[in-house]
Length: 69
Image (cartoon, rainbow, N blue to C red; front, top):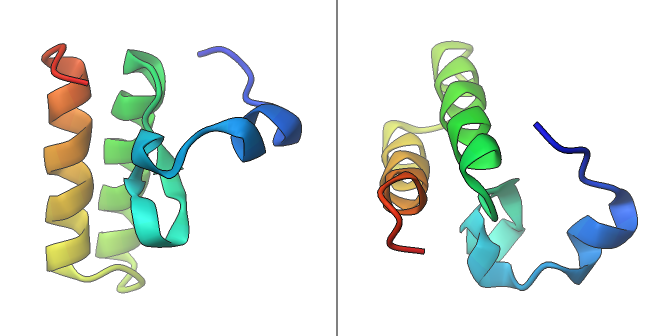
């Protein structure tokens, strides 16, 4: 997975994040989309992310992975 610098992350539009409102889980490429799903699942299992938010991350990441970004 390519590095995402702070400057590059700040330059990404909100629509390139799975959770746009909070700009969490960048999904601008397939590698980051896969990573977003893994991290969201970890946070869900730790009780720090709701099922609805996890499902939202999964939907958005799957759209990128299927080439519908």
